[in-house]
Image (cartoon, rainbow, N blue to C red; front, side, top):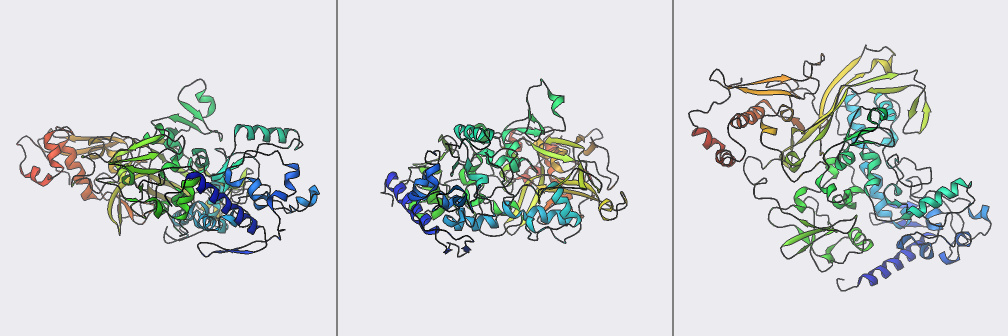
Length: 632
């Protein structure tokens, strides 16, 4: 197979697509790769694409990708309708103007891509299972945040109404109902949420078509192809943990457009949220796209039902930035999906080994190994990126072997505090995000402040072992349940102080210094403030003065996760995951013990470097001037 030229491979692929498309025009049942049976609901006419009546009016249409060219697969295979009729009205009967929505994907995209469709339908981007599970959990409607749900199955309980009002917009089952490109306001759209691309000419033609009351037919058709860009991700992933905005280096604020007029380093999104400029992720500054790392195997899913996003994401930094040598497979061992991606992107490294992910062995087809060096081909511009192995000082010592890469290599993350949720049954401006309709009455969310800082440290304990990962406030919030259930505001208010695991996507080559963890109150979970080490009495004592006032619900500072060296919030429900927790008192003391040493010794000093291999030996051979902490 390695001997096939690229042109030969492409001809075979196009021929295969044509054959599949012609067969799919019949009223049949198609047995997919995953043995998931899909059935059409419209009776089609068996007709050659070249003879479809569609091309009599749309003969000059251009802009199609190679593999969706109507000369090969016709128009009916995507848009349905009746290609045997020459009458406009009859030929358009049953036509789907916007194919690819999950409501029609079984009859459209799924005809040729049944395996991919079955995976997408089970993916978290479609089910939103984790979002529903956690919301129902914190509302007290479920005993665990780990149950499986589907966003389109929710009804109208307090939490489900909360989701409908604030969260249920971002899922692939949401219908794309208007013609046009994918923007930062786009939500859903099924297959075309990722695979629809408008050229400038297609965009101009569409505007002219709409401006002339649909008289001037567009000549440039948008392309449906594999070239996913960051704009496709932005609409949904600029919400919640703000991964897309973080990646590009933008921090959300509570400012409005008027307040930042004539000011630099601000950005107003299409939904009018105002963002301030921060440091972007190193991969973004090197022109890399989200899909350079997160391939189709992760994005479309595997067909398995997952509850939380970290279960579905199998790629790790170490897959590219390996320790000694990368895990690889030869080209002729690629799975069908990876072969298609390779072919559509016109890659030519079939004679080289390709990197695979350690966790599930899925191929990273835009990578290859040549000699002793690995490379990544940027999907945005084809730029070749040399993949750098981890440095000798990175996670090689005993002290830091349990740290996730993002713990040290994230430059900042978002923190949202002071969230208050109350239901206003008389609000005339309510909008049901799931059913896409105006309603009276909605949950209203009030946010006190958006902050940025280094992420806090959380502990993941699972069957795979123990791992220290970044954490952010997931839900430091009050919910006025009484306002929904009996219209009595303030009578049944619940308070939650929950942090969540977070991958900030603000990666830097440089790492945070040792003090930013070992003597940083935010990293330790205490919140922002002044953490000092007092040795004035000859005995070491850590002291903490919080920046924010104490919340009357639990006595902790507004932005804190846990109490300062005390049990506050340690034994409560304190995270959005059952396998994730804050640092224990013992772990806090261990961190602060090293922090005490760092008051005098720099990160790069010999004693601190040696301590990473055998800290207990250093403790037994202390200098007489060393003062260790004696906090209880």
